[in-house]
Length: 582
Ligand code: TEU
Image 1 (cartoon, rainbow, N blue to C red):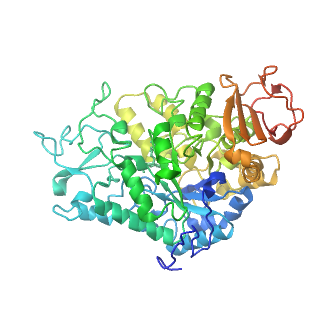
Image 2 (image 1 turned 60 degrees about the vertical axis):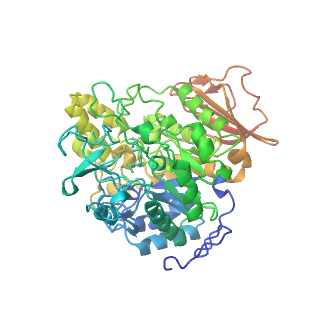
Image 3 (image 1 turned 45 degrees about the vertical axis):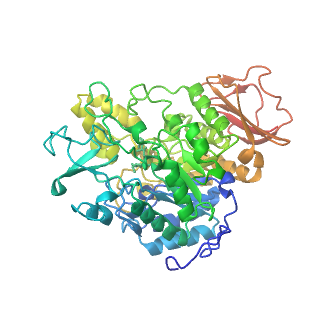
Protein backbone atom coordinates (compact mmCIF):
# COMPACT_ATOMS: atom_id res chain seq x y z
CA UNK A 1 0.00 0.00 0.00
CA UNK A 2 1.69 3.26 -1.03
CA UNK A 3 0.89 6.75 0.29
CA UNK A 4 -1.85 8.96 -1.28
CA UNK A 5 -2.90 6.40 -3.84
CA UNK A 6 -5.73 5.08 -1.67
CA UNK A 7 -8.45 7.73 -1.91
CA UNK A 8 -11.04 7.74 0.85
CA UNK A 9 -14.63 7.66 -0.50
CA UNK A 10 -17.22 10.22 0.61
CA UNK A 11 -19.21 7.47 2.36
CA UNK A 12 -16.52 7.39 5.00
CA UNK A 13 -15.11 4.11 3.79
CA UNK A 14 -11.32 4.09 3.59
CA UNK A 15 -10.99 2.53 0.10
CA UNK A 16 -7.47 1.28 0.91
CA UNK A 17 -8.69 -0.68 3.88
CA UNK A 18 -12.44 -0.94 3.15
CA UNK A 19 -13.16 -0.08 6.78
CA UNK A 20 -16.74 1.17 7.05
CA UNK A 21 -17.27 4.37 9.05
CA UNK A 22 -21.00 4.98 9.55
CA UNK A 23 -22.26 8.46 10.46
CA UNK A 24 -21.58 9.10 14.16
CA UNK A 25 -20.03 5.64 14.59
CA UNK A 26 -17.95 6.89 17.54
CA UNK A 27 -21.08 7.54 19.68
CA UNK A 28 -21.33 3.90 20.80
CA UNK A 29 -17.65 3.14 20.47
CA UNK A 30 -15.11 2.58 23.24
CA UNK A 31 -11.58 3.92 22.71
CA UNK A 32 -8.46 2.25 24.14
CA UNK A 33 -5.43 4.52 24.55
CA UNK A 34 -2.00 3.00 23.91
CA UNK A 35 1.17 4.72 25.13
CA UNK A 36 3.56 2.92 22.77
CA UNK A 37 6.70 3.33 24.88
CA UNK A 38 5.07 1.31 27.66
CA UNK A 39 2.76 -1.17 25.90
CA UNK A 40 4.90 -4.05 24.60
CA UNK A 41 8.54 -4.34 23.52
CA UNK A 42 9.11 -6.82 20.67
CA UNK A 43 12.87 -6.38 20.16
CA UNK A 44 14.22 -6.33 23.70
CA UNK A 45 15.47 -2.73 23.66
CA UNK A 46 13.39 -1.97 26.74
CA UNK A 47 10.97 0.36 24.91
CA UNK A 48 7.57 -0.62 23.54
CA UNK A 49 7.04 -0.59 19.77
CA UNK A 50 4.54 -1.10 16.94
CA UNK A 51 5.36 -4.80 16.52
CA UNK A 52 4.65 -5.22 20.22
CA UNK A 53 1.20 -3.70 19.70
CA UNK A 54 0.53 -5.95 16.69
CA UNK A 55 1.53 -8.98 18.79
CA UNK A 56 -1.07 -8.02 21.43
CA UNK A 57 -4.06 -7.08 19.27
CA UNK A 58 -5.86 -10.20 20.50
CA UNK A 59 -5.87 -8.70 23.98
CA UNK A 60 -7.78 -5.71 22.57
CA UNK A 61 -10.08 -7.91 20.49
CA UNK A 62 -11.03 -9.95 23.54
CA UNK A 63 -11.60 -6.76 25.52
CA UNK A 64 -13.92 -5.67 22.71
CA UNK A 65 -12.67 -2.12 22.14
CA UNK A 66 -13.62 -0.37 18.90
CA UNK A 67 -10.77 2.10 18.53
CA UNK A 68 -7.13 2.45 19.50
CA UNK A 69 -5.82 5.95 20.16
CA UNK A 70 -2.09 5.73 19.54
CA UNK A 71 0.04 8.24 21.41
CA UNK A 72 2.81 9.59 19.14
CA UNK A 73 5.07 7.13 17.26
CA UNK A 74 6.55 9.71 14.88
CA UNK A 75 10.24 10.59 14.52
CA UNK A 76 11.21 12.51 17.65
CA UNK A 77 14.26 13.34 19.83
CA UNK A 78 11.92 12.23 22.67
CA UNK A 79 12.37 15.28 24.86
CA UNK A 80 8.70 14.80 25.83
CA UNK A 81 8.39 11.15 24.86
CA UNK A 82 7.28 11.80 21.31
CA UNK A 83 5.09 14.88 21.86
CA UNK A 84 8.02 16.70 20.24
CA UNK A 85 7.89 15.61 16.61
CA UNK A 86 10.76 16.09 14.14
CA UNK A 87 9.03 14.41 11.17
CA UNK A 88 5.28 13.77 11.02
CA UNK A 89 5.51 11.33 8.15
CA UNK A 90 8.22 9.05 9.53
CA UNK A 91 7.93 6.48 12.33
CA UNK A 92 10.69 6.78 14.95
CA UNK A 93 13.01 3.74 14.64
CA UNK A 94 12.48 3.21 18.39
CA UNK A 95 8.88 2.27 17.53
CA UNK A 96 9.51 0.64 14.13
CA UNK A 97 8.85 1.60 10.53
CA UNK A 98 6.10 2.84 8.23
CA UNK A 99 5.70 -0.76 7.08
CA UNK A 100 5.00 -1.73 10.73
CA UNK A 101 2.47 1.10 10.95
CA UNK A 102 0.75 -0.10 7.76
CA UNK A 103 0.64 -3.61 9.16
CA UNK A 104 -0.82 -2.38 12.43
CA UNK A 105 -3.54 -0.56 10.47
CA UNK A 106 -4.24 -3.65 8.41
CA UNK A 107 -4.27 -6.09 11.32
CA UNK A 108 -6.34 -3.81 13.54
CA UNK A 109 -8.86 -3.16 10.78
CA UNK A 110 -9.05 -6.89 10.11
CA UNK A 111 -10.23 -7.22 13.73
CA UNK A 112 -12.71 -4.37 13.35
CA UNK A 113 -10.54 -2.04 15.46
CA UNK A 114 -10.03 1.48 14.14
CA UNK A 115 -6.84 3.52 14.63
CA UNK A 116 -6.77 7.14 15.78
CA UNK A 117 -3.45 8.99 15.54
CA UNK A 118 -2.14 11.64 17.93
CA UNK A 119 -1.92 15.00 16.12
CA UNK A 120 0.65 17.27 17.79
CA UNK A 121 0.57 20.52 15.82
CA UNK A 122 0.54 23.26 18.43
CA UNK A 123 4.28 22.77 18.40
CA UNK A 124 6.94 20.73 16.68
CA UNK A 125 10.34 19.55 17.86
CA UNK A 126 13.15 22.10 17.54
CA UNK A 127 14.79 19.40 15.39
CA UNK A 128 11.97 19.49 12.84
CA UNK A 129 13.14 20.69 9.40
CA UNK A 130 10.56 23.49 9.56
CA UNK A 131 12.14 24.92 12.74
CA UNK A 132 15.70 24.38 11.59
CA UNK A 133 14.79 26.38 8.49
CA UNK A 134 12.92 28.99 10.52
CA UNK A 135 15.89 29.44 12.83
CA UNK A 136 17.91 30.93 9.94
CA UNK A 137 17.57 34.75 10.03
CA UNK A 138 15.73 35.93 6.92
CA UNK A 139 14.44 32.41 6.19
CA UNK A 140 11.17 32.11 4.29
CA UNK A 141 9.94 30.05 7.23
CA UNK A 142 10.89 32.61 9.90
CA UNK A 143 7.21 33.38 10.44
CA UNK A 144 6.31 29.70 10.86
CA UNK A 145 7.11 30.10 14.59
CA UNK A 146 6.82 32.90 17.18
CA UNK A 147 10.10 34.82 17.08
CA UNK A 148 10.43 38.05 19.02
CA UNK A 149 13.31 40.42 19.90
CA UNK A 150 14.39 40.83 23.52
CA UNK A 151 12.36 43.13 25.75
CA UNK A 152 13.19 46.76 25.00
CA UNK A 153 16.13 48.04 27.07
CA UNK A 154 17.26 44.56 28.08
CA UNK A 155 20.42 42.73 27.03
CA UNK A 156 19.26 39.69 24.98
CA UNK A 157 19.76 36.41 26.83
CA UNK A 158 19.74 38.04 30.27
CA UNK A 159 17.03 37.31 32.93
CA UNK A 160 14.01 39.52 32.37
CA UNK A 161 14.86 40.15 28.72
CA UNK A 162 12.24 37.68 27.55
CA UNK A 163 9.63 39.30 25.24
CA UNK A 164 6.85 38.57 27.80
CA UNK A 165 6.85 37.28 31.38
CA UNK A 166 5.07 34.06 30.44
CA UNK A 167 5.95 30.75 32.07
CA UNK A 168 5.58 27.50 30.15
CA UNK A 169 3.67 24.39 31.24
CA UNK A 170 6.99 22.72 32.00
CA UNK A 171 9.60 25.39 32.69
CA UNK A 172 10.05 28.86 34.21
CA UNK A 173 10.01 30.95 31.00
CA UNK A 174 8.05 30.21 27.83
CA UNK A 175 10.75 31.96 25.78
CA UNK A 176 14.12 30.55 24.66
CA UNK A 177 16.88 32.87 23.46
CA UNK A 178 18.43 31.75 20.18
CA UNK A 179 22.02 33.03 20.10
CA UNK A 180 22.41 32.44 16.33
CA UNK A 181 19.49 34.63 15.33
CA UNK A 182 19.62 36.98 18.32
CA UNK A 183 15.91 36.53 19.03
CA UNK A 184 13.63 34.52 21.32
CA UNK A 185 11.16 31.84 20.26
CA UNK A 186 7.96 30.86 22.13
CA UNK A 187 7.56 27.36 23.62
CA UNK A 188 4.55 26.70 25.87
CA UNK A 189 6.03 23.28 26.73
CA UNK A 190 9.73 22.38 26.80
CA UNK A 191 12.27 24.56 24.98
CA UNK A 192 12.59 21.72 22.48
CA UNK A 193 8.87 22.15 21.59
CA UNK A 194 8.65 25.54 19.76
CA UNK A 195 5.08 26.68 19.07
CA UNK A 196 3.95 26.84 15.45
CA UNK A 197 2.50 30.14 14.22
CA UNK A 198 -0.98 29.20 13.01
CA UNK A 199 -1.59 32.78 11.94
CA UNK A 200 0.58 31.86 8.92
CA UNK A 201 -1.60 30.13 6.26
CA UNK A 202 1.42 28.23 4.93
CA UNK A 203 1.76 26.53 8.32
CA UNK A 204 -1.89 25.53 8.31
CA UNK A 205 -1.78 24.17 4.74
CA UNK A 206 1.35 22.15 5.56
CA UNK A 207 -0.42 20.61 8.57
CA UNK A 208 -3.56 19.79 6.55
CA UNK A 209 -1.47 18.14 3.81
CA UNK A 210 0.24 15.97 6.45
CA UNK A 211 -3.14 14.99 7.92
CA UNK A 212 -4.51 14.06 4.46
CA UNK A 213 -1.41 11.88 3.96
CA UNK A 214 -2.32 9.90 7.08
CA UNK A 215 -6.01 9.71 6.13
CA UNK A 216 -5.00 8.29 2.76
CA UNK A 217 -2.99 5.66 4.65
CA UNK A 218 -6.21 4.54 6.30
CA UNK A 219 -6.24 6.12 9.77
CA UNK A 220 -9.70 6.59 11.27
CA UNK A 221 -9.24 9.83 13.18
CA UNK A 222 -7.13 12.18 15.26
CA UNK A 223 -6.68 12.97 18.94
CA UNK A 224 -5.49 16.57 18.79
CA UNK A 225 -2.88 17.60 21.35
CA UNK A 226 -3.54 20.93 23.17
CA UNK A 227 -5.41 22.04 20.06
CA UNK A 228 -7.07 24.94 21.88
CA UNK A 229 -3.68 26.66 22.18
CA UNK A 230 -3.08 27.07 18.40
CA UNK A 231 -4.74 30.53 18.14
CA UNK A 232 -2.58 32.90 20.17
CA UNK A 233 -3.66 36.44 21.05
CA UNK A 234 -2.51 38.87 18.36
CA UNK A 235 -0.65 40.99 20.89
CA UNK A 236 1.66 38.98 23.20
CA UNK A 237 1.57 41.01 26.43
CA UNK A 238 2.85 40.62 29.98
CA UNK A 239 0.47 39.09 32.53
CA UNK A 240 0.10 39.52 36.31
CA UNK A 241 2.29 36.80 37.88
CA UNK A 242 1.28 35.16 41.14
CA UNK A 243 2.80 36.69 44.26
CA UNK A 244 6.45 35.72 44.60
CA UNK A 245 6.68 34.44 41.03
CA UNK A 246 8.72 36.13 38.28
CA UNK A 247 6.71 34.49 35.50
CA UNK A 248 2.96 34.28 34.85
CA UNK A 249 1.26 31.12 33.54
CA UNK A 250 -0.44 32.17 30.30
CA UNK A 251 -3.09 29.39 30.38
CA UNK A 252 -6.22 31.50 29.95
CA UNK A 253 -4.40 34.02 27.75
CA UNK A 254 -3.43 31.50 25.09
CA UNK A 255 -6.33 29.04 25.35
CA UNK A 256 -9.31 29.38 23.00
CA UNK A 257 -7.78 32.27 21.04
CA UNK A 258 -9.77 34.50 18.67
CA UNK A 259 -9.31 32.32 15.55
CA UNK A 260 -9.51 28.85 17.11
CA UNK A 261 -12.93 27.99 15.72
CA UNK A 262 -12.02 29.42 12.30
CA UNK A 263 -8.93 27.20 12.21
CA UNK A 264 -10.86 24.11 13.32
CA UNK A 265 -13.49 24.67 10.62
CA UNK A 266 -10.81 25.24 8.00
CA UNK A 267 -9.01 22.05 9.09
CA UNK A 268 -12.23 20.04 9.01
CA UNK A 269 -12.96 21.24 5.47
CA UNK A 270 -9.38 20.91 4.16
CA UNK A 271 -8.83 17.41 5.54
CA UNK A 272 -12.44 16.18 5.23
CA UNK A 273 -12.75 15.27 8.91
CA UNK A 274 -16.56 15.05 8.70
CA UNK A 275 -16.61 14.05 5.03
CA UNK A 276 -14.55 10.95 5.84
CA UNK A 277 -16.36 10.44 9.15
CA UNK A 278 -13.13 10.47 11.10
CA UNK A 279 -13.17 10.41 14.91
CA UNK A 280 -11.86 13.77 16.16
CA UNK A 281 -11.22 14.66 19.81
CA UNK A 282 -9.47 17.85 20.87
CA UNK A 283 -7.42 17.95 24.09
CA UNK A 284 -8.43 21.31 25.54
CA UNK A 285 -7.01 22.25 28.95
CA UNK A 286 -9.17 25.04 30.38
CA UNK A 287 -12.16 24.29 28.13
CA UNK A 288 -15.64 24.98 29.49
CA UNK A 289 -19.05 23.48 28.74
CA UNK A 290 -19.80 26.53 26.57
CA UNK A 291 -16.64 25.90 24.56
CA UNK A 292 -17.55 22.23 24.14
CA UNK A 293 -21.15 23.00 23.08
CA UNK A 294 -19.85 25.27 20.32
CA UNK A 295 -16.96 23.08 19.15
CA UNK A 296 -18.68 19.67 19.27
CA UNK A 297 -21.97 20.83 17.78
CA UNK A 298 -22.27 18.40 14.79
CA UNK A 299 -23.57 21.28 12.66
CA UNK A 300 -20.56 23.45 13.43
CA UNK A 301 -18.07 21.51 11.31
CA UNK A 302 -15.29 21.41 13.90
CA UNK A 303 -14.70 18.39 16.21
CA UNK A 304 -16.68 15.44 17.58
CA UNK A 305 -15.45 15.69 21.17
CA UNK A 306 -13.10 17.56 23.47
CA UNK A 307 -11.07 16.44 26.48
CA UNK A 308 -11.91 18.81 29.31
CA UNK A 309 -9.67 18.95 32.42
CA UNK A 310 -12.29 20.23 34.88
CA UNK A 311 -12.74 16.87 36.61
CA UNK A 312 -8.98 16.44 36.59
CA UNK A 313 -8.71 19.50 38.81
CA UNK A 314 -11.36 18.58 41.41
CA UNK A 315 -8.66 17.37 43.80
CA UNK A 316 -6.10 20.07 42.97
CA UNK A 317 -5.71 22.64 45.77
CA UNK A 318 -6.26 26.41 45.52
CA UNK A 319 -2.56 26.78 44.64
CA UNK A 320 -3.39 25.14 41.33
CA UNK A 321 -0.27 23.04 41.85
CA UNK A 322 -1.26 19.53 40.81
CA UNK A 323 1.60 18.16 42.93
CA UNK A 324 -0.13 19.57 46.01
CA UNK A 325 -3.39 17.60 45.88
CA UNK A 326 -6.33 17.96 48.29
CA UNK A 327 -8.58 15.05 49.41
CA UNK A 328 -11.17 14.08 46.80
CA UNK A 329 -14.67 15.43 47.37
CA UNK A 330 -16.89 12.82 45.70
CA UNK A 331 -19.91 15.14 45.55
CA UNK A 332 -17.83 17.78 43.72
CA UNK A 333 -16.63 15.15 41.25
CA UNK A 334 -20.17 13.82 40.68
CA UNK A 335 -21.57 17.29 40.21
CA UNK A 336 -18.82 18.24 37.75
CA UNK A 337 -19.47 15.27 35.51
CA UNK A 338 -23.21 15.87 35.85
CA UNK A 339 -22.76 19.47 34.68
CA UNK A 340 -21.06 18.26 31.48
CA UNK A 341 -23.73 15.61 30.96
CA UNK A 342 -26.50 18.18 31.27
CA UNK A 343 -24.51 20.80 29.35
CA UNK A 344 -24.08 18.55 26.30
CA UNK A 345 -27.40 16.72 26.55
CA UNK A 346 -28.95 18.53 23.57
CA UNK A 347 -25.91 19.42 21.50
CA UNK A 348 -22.40 18.03 21.07
CA UNK A 349 -20.94 14.94 22.69
CA UNK A 350 -18.83 14.12 25.74
CA UNK A 351 -15.57 12.23 26.00
CA UNK A 352 -15.37 10.16 29.23
CA UNK A 353 -12.04 9.44 30.95
CA UNK A 354 -10.53 8.98 34.39
CA UNK A 355 -6.89 9.05 33.29
CA UNK A 356 -4.39 8.92 30.46
CA UNK A 357 -0.60 9.15 29.98
CA UNK A 358 -0.60 12.58 31.74
CA UNK A 359 -2.59 11.60 34.83
CA UNK A 360 -1.99 9.20 37.74
CA UNK A 361 -3.73 5.83 37.71
CA UNK A 362 -7.50 6.14 38.27
CA UNK A 363 -7.78 3.34 40.87
CA UNK A 364 -5.05 4.97 42.98
CA UNK A 365 -6.52 8.49 42.64
CA UNK A 366 -10.30 8.05 42.60
CA UNK A 367 -10.53 4.46 43.92
CA UNK A 368 -8.74 2.48 46.62
CA UNK A 369 -5.65 0.58 45.40
CA UNK A 370 -5.19 -1.37 48.62
CA UNK A 371 -5.12 -5.19 48.08
CA UNK A 372 -8.53 -5.36 49.78
CA UNK A 373 -10.34 -2.91 47.48
CA UNK A 374 -8.22 -2.56 44.31
CA UNK A 375 -10.33 -4.94 42.19
CA UNK A 376 -13.75 -3.75 43.39
CA UNK A 377 -12.86 -0.08 43.11
CA UNK A 378 -11.33 -0.50 39.63
CA UNK A 379 -14.53 -2.24 38.49
CA UNK A 380 -16.84 0.29 40.09
CA UNK A 381 -14.93 3.27 38.67
CA UNK A 382 -15.25 1.67 35.23
CA UNK A 383 -18.99 1.13 35.71
CA UNK A 384 -19.48 4.74 36.79
CA UNK A 385 -17.52 6.05 33.77
CA UNK A 386 -19.30 3.81 31.25
CA UNK A 387 -22.71 4.67 32.76
CA UNK A 388 -22.26 8.28 31.66
CA UNK A 389 -23.35 9.51 28.22
CA UNK A 390 -20.43 9.95 25.83
CA UNK A 391 -17.50 7.99 24.42
CA UNK A 392 -15.46 6.16 27.10
CA UNK A 393 -11.65 6.12 26.90
CA UNK A 394 -9.86 3.21 28.56
CA UNK A 395 -6.19 3.91 29.27
CA UNK A 396 -3.88 0.93 28.81
CA UNK A 397 -3.66 -1.12 32.00
CA UNK A 398 -6.85 0.26 33.54
CA UNK A 399 -8.60 -2.89 32.26
CA UNK A 400 -6.24 -4.78 34.60
CA UNK A 401 -6.66 -2.42 37.56
CA UNK A 402 -3.03 -1.23 37.27
CA UNK A 403 -2.04 1.17 40.07
CA UNK A 404 0.38 4.01 40.73
CA UNK A 405 3.89 2.76 41.44
CA UNK A 406 6.30 3.51 44.28
CA UNK A 407 9.39 5.20 42.90
CA UNK A 408 12.11 5.45 45.55
CA UNK A 409 13.89 8.62 44.46
CA UNK A 410 14.02 11.25 41.76
CA UNK A 411 16.47 9.18 39.68
CA UNK A 412 13.63 6.71 39.03
CA UNK A 413 11.54 9.39 37.30
CA UNK A 414 11.77 10.03 33.55
CA UNK A 415 8.91 12.46 32.87
CA UNK A 416 10.12 15.93 31.84
CA UNK A 417 7.22 17.61 33.70
CA UNK A 418 8.05 15.74 36.93
CA UNK A 419 11.79 16.41 36.67
CA UNK A 420 11.14 20.12 35.96
CA UNK A 421 8.78 20.35 38.90
CA UNK A 422 11.39 18.71 41.14
CA UNK A 423 14.05 21.18 39.98
CA UNK A 424 11.82 24.25 40.32
CA UNK A 425 10.38 23.26 43.71
CA UNK A 426 13.85 22.44 45.03
CA UNK A 427 15.12 25.85 43.83
CA UNK A 428 12.19 27.49 45.66
CA UNK A 429 13.22 25.69 48.88
CA UNK A 430 10.29 23.25 49.07
CA UNK A 431 11.14 20.34 51.40
CA UNK A 432 12.37 17.23 49.55
CA UNK A 433 9.81 14.97 51.31
CA UNK A 434 6.98 17.28 50.23
CA UNK A 435 8.21 17.28 46.63
CA UNK A 436 8.60 13.49 46.53
CA UNK A 437 5.19 13.02 48.19
CA UNK A 438 3.59 15.14 45.47
CA UNK A 439 5.38 13.27 42.70
CA UNK A 440 4.43 9.90 44.18
CA UNK A 441 0.73 10.60 43.75
CA UNK A 442 0.71 12.92 40.73
CA UNK A 443 3.65 12.24 38.47
CA UNK A 444 2.75 11.29 34.90
CA UNK A 445 5.25 8.42 35.24
CA UNK A 446 2.64 6.61 37.36
CA UNK A 447 0.66 6.08 34.16
CA UNK A 448 3.71 5.20 32.10
CA UNK A 449 5.10 2.17 33.90
CA UNK A 450 5.30 -0.80 31.51
CA UNK A 451 2.16 -2.79 30.74
CA UNK A 452 1.94 -5.85 32.99
CA UNK A 453 1.31 -8.78 30.67
CA UNK A 454 2.18 -11.68 33.03
CA UNK A 455 4.17 -12.63 36.15
CA UNK A 456 7.39 -13.47 34.32
CA UNK A 457 10.56 -11.36 34.05
CA UNK A 458 9.77 -7.64 33.63
CA UNK A 459 6.05 -8.56 33.57
CA UNK A 460 6.46 -9.93 30.02
CA UNK A 461 6.86 -6.35 28.75
CA UNK A 462 10.45 -6.78 27.55
CA UNK A 463 13.29 -9.27 27.43
CA UNK A 464 15.61 -6.27 28.02
CA UNK A 465 15.80 -3.51 30.62
CA UNK A 466 12.62 -1.40 30.64
CA UNK A 467 13.02 2.37 30.02
CA UNK A 468 10.93 2.90 33.19
CA UNK A 469 10.79 0.33 35.97
CA UNK A 470 7.93 -2.12 36.10
CA UNK A 471 5.48 -1.76 39.00
CA UNK A 472 6.51 -4.50 41.47
CA UNK A 473 2.89 -5.57 41.91
CA UNK A 474 2.95 -7.14 38.41
CA UNK A 475 3.22 -10.55 40.05
CA UNK A 476 -0.45 -10.16 41.06
CA UNK A 477 -1.70 -7.49 38.65
CA UNK A 478 -1.22 -8.76 35.08
CA UNK A 479 -3.18 -9.49 31.89
CA UNK A 480 -2.63 -13.26 31.94
CA UNK A 481 -4.08 -13.64 35.44
CA UNK A 482 -6.90 -11.20 34.68
CA UNK A 483 -7.98 -12.91 31.46
CA UNK A 484 -7.98 -16.33 33.19
CA UNK A 485 -10.19 -15.06 36.05
CA UNK A 486 -13.84 -14.51 35.03
CA UNK A 487 -14.32 -12.28 38.14
CA UNK A 488 -11.46 -9.97 37.13
CA UNK A 489 -11.38 -6.27 36.29
CA UNK A 490 -10.61 -7.29 32.68
CA UNK A 491 -13.86 -9.24 32.27
CA UNK A 492 -15.84 -6.53 34.06
CA UNK A 493 -14.61 -3.91 31.57
CA UNK A 494 -15.14 -6.36 28.69
CA UNK A 495 -18.77 -6.77 29.83
CA UNK A 496 -19.25 -2.97 30.07
CA UNK A 497 -18.05 -2.59 26.47
CA UNK A 498 -20.35 -5.44 25.39
CA UNK A 499 -23.30 -3.73 27.12
CA UNK A 500 -22.57 -0.47 25.28
CA UNK A 501 -22.86 -2.39 22.02
CA UNK A 502 -26.01 -4.28 23.13
CA UNK A 503 -27.97 -1.65 25.07
CA UNK A 504 -28.70 1.59 23.13
CA UNK A 505 -29.77 3.18 26.44
CA UNK A 506 -26.12 3.04 27.59
CA UNK A 507 -24.90 4.92 24.50
CA UNK A 508 -27.75 7.33 23.89
CA UNK A 509 -30.01 7.35 27.00
CA UNK A 510 -30.83 10.65 28.74
CA UNK A 511 -28.62 11.10 31.82
CA UNK A 512 -29.76 11.78 35.36
CA UNK A 513 -27.68 11.91 38.55
CA UNK A 514 -29.65 10.65 41.58
CA UNK A 515 -28.71 11.17 45.25
CA UNK A 516 -26.25 13.82 43.99
CA UNK A 517 -25.30 15.03 47.48
CA UNK A 518 -24.60 11.59 48.92
CA UNK A 519 -20.90 11.51 49.88
CA UNK A 520 -20.53 7.77 49.16
CA UNK A 521 -23.14 6.69 46.60
CA UNK A 522 -22.88 7.46 42.86
CA UNK A 523 -26.25 6.69 41.30
CA UNK A 524 -26.93 7.22 37.61
CA UNK A 525 -30.16 6.69 35.67
CA UNK A 526 -30.23 6.52 31.89
CA UNK A 527 -33.49 6.56 29.96
CA UNK A 528 -34.18 5.85 26.27
CA UNK A 529 -37.80 5.33 25.27
CA UNK A 530 -39.11 2.44 27.40
CA UNK A 531 -35.61 1.42 28.48
CA UNK A 532 -34.24 2.56 31.84
CA UNK A 533 -30.81 1.65 33.11
CA UNK A 534 -29.79 2.29 36.72
CA UNK A 535 -26.31 2.15 38.24
CA UNK A 536 -25.99 2.13 42.02
CA UNK A 537 -22.39 2.41 43.15
CA UNK A 538 -20.70 2.80 46.53
CA UNK A 539 -17.57 4.84 45.76
CA UNK A 540 -16.08 4.63 49.24
CA UNK A 541 -14.04 2.20 51.30
CA UNK A 542 -16.81 2.01 53.90
CA UNK A 543 -20.23 0.32 53.75
CA UNK A 544 -23.03 2.54 52.40
CA UNK A 545 -26.80 2.47 52.78
CA UNK A 546 -29.45 3.51 50.27
CA UNK A 547 -32.07 5.47 52.18
CA UNK A 548 -35.52 3.83 52.25
CA UNK A 549 -37.57 4.87 49.18
CA UNK A 550 -34.82 7.00 47.69
CA UNK A 551 -34.48 4.69 44.69
CA UNK A 552 -37.00 2.77 42.56
CA UNK A 553 -37.71 -0.83 43.66
CA UNK A 554 -35.30 -3.21 41.98
CA UNK A 555 -36.81 -6.59 42.82
CA UNK A 556 -38.04 -7.08 39.23
CA UNK A 557 -35.12 -5.37 37.59
CA UNK A 558 -32.74 -7.29 35.29
CA UNK A 559 -29.22 -7.34 36.70
CA UNK A 560 -26.72 -6.52 33.97
CA UNK A 561 -23.46 -6.34 35.89
CA UNK A 562 -22.38 -6.31 39.53
CA UNK A 563 -19.21 -6.48 41.58
CA UNK A 564 -20.60 -8.49 44.52
CA UNK A 565 -23.13 -10.79 42.87
CA UNK A 566 -26.91 -10.34 42.57
CA UNK A 567 -27.68 -8.34 45.73
CA UNK A 568 -30.57 -5.84 45.81
CA UNK A 569 -30.72 -4.75 49.46
CA UNK A 570 -30.12 -1.24 50.80
CA UNK A 571 -26.64 -2.12 52.09
CA UNK A 572 -23.70 -1.82 49.70
CA UNK A 573 -20.27 -3.11 50.58
CA UNK A 574 -17.24 -0.86 50.09
CA UNK A 575 -16.82 -0.21 46.34
CA UNK A 576 -19.84 -2.40 45.49
CA UNK A 577 -21.76 -1.46 42.32
CA UNK A 578 -24.82 -2.88 40.57
CA UNK A 579 -26.12 -2.08 37.08
CA UNK A 580 -29.74 -2.91 36.24
CA UNK A 581 -32.22 -2.63 33.45
CA UNK A 582 -35.24 -1.43 35.37
O1 TEU B 1 -0.74 17.58 27.42
C1 TEU B 1 -1.11 18.88 27.63
C2 TEU B 1 -1.38 19.16 29.01
O2 TEU B 1 -2.20 19.92 29.32
C3 TEU B 1 -0.61 18.38 29.97
O3 TEU B 1 0.66 18.71 29.83
C4 TEU B 1 -1.02 18.70 31.34
O4 TEU B 1 -0.96 19.99 31.60
C5 TEU B 1 -0.17 18.07 32.31
O5 TEU B 1 0.55 17.05 31.87
C6 TEU B 1 -1.08 17.57 33.34
O6 TEU B 1 -0.29 17.23 34.32
C7 TEU B 1 -0.41 17.25 26.09
C8 TEU B 1 0.07 15.81 26.05
O7 TEU B 1 -0.97 14.98 26.46
C9 TEU B 1 1.26 15.73 26.98
O8 TEU B 1 1.72 14.41 27.12
C10 TEU B 1 2.36 16.60 26.41
O9 TEU B 1 3.41 16.63 27.33
C11 TEU B 1 1.86 18.02 26.16
O10 TEU B 1 0.57 18.09 25.57
C12 TEU B 1 2.77 18.72 25.18
O11 TEU B 1 2.65 18.11 23.92
